[in-house]
Image 1 (cartoon, one colour):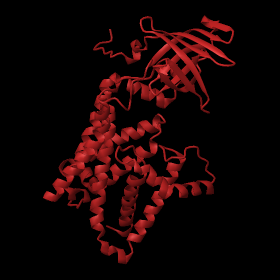
Image 2 (image 1 turned 90 degrees about the vertical axis):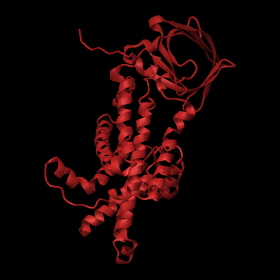
Image 3 (image 1 turned 60 degrees about the vertical axis):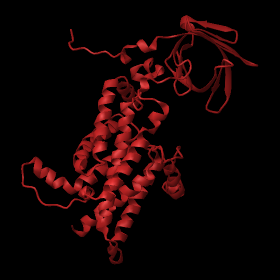
Image 4 (image 1 turned 180 degrees about the vertical axis):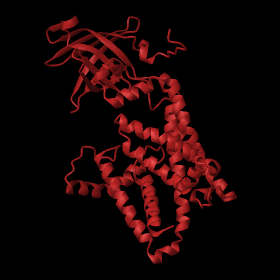
Length: 403
């Protein structure tokens, strides 16, 4: 291996290792990751942003945020510096080839772990969840591409199962030496599709999915030549792949592998077992969850009925939001807190100003009345719950023929 090629390989290896440590991902038992990234790189990231005149709104290293982009660039630079330092003569005694074997193994576990978590999210319908009522009653042309894609995927339970299995299988294969190469090939195909979707539909995990794809290419690199030779019916060449070292039969390694895989499986399944949520389509929603058609809206002394009513629908969102839809299709959302004992609904705007409504709800007629009697204002909203679950998009429709 030439000096330049060796340097690039070490650069990529250090970058992948640092990315796994500091690019945040929602692990259940590794919540300290965001804290570590902020503690070590937060100040430097802010300094660099100010230095080059970049303004940001999101303080955390959240998905595709400007601060996360800067962090990733810094990790690339620091990894390149480490690669140069590791080429110094006095550091060659550290036997780089041992590190070269360990990093791909760690990266394989990491990639398999992430694929497993994403796969389970789809299998249990927790990523592409059932479209919320406010989305179902929105005009298609008013939706952003990412919301439209998310909602379309969420409308099909069977396709979510298929997608989940297609990510779980390569994820599990990556945990074991004998199936790791096949797992990498499957993972590469999955991740290429994921990256294409994220860029094509403007979904905000472009950077992280690109990082996962980079890991897959890096791990495939050592046997890419033989893969091409095999596909093109050429004679295979003898190569030493660092990723093959994990297949060495030792009791210590097999027991260690069993412990690591067990921890990954427990971590990945923990949230679903804890919440007993194995199909989010059927999981309990918040109180009054659904869509409500506004029949009468009294504001002050004015009663607005039928076509003159400025309010069209109310939507109780599963994430504790109340959404007002007006006649012009505009929607405004408020954080809400429902007290089922006092039968009150408290709404909060962005500045934490609150408005309290009393709730009257008839279970049989599905009619609801929200009453607000403020010191200087008065509102009464009469509405009826809609049968939103009968809308065509979320019906399990299937046709063998078109006629």
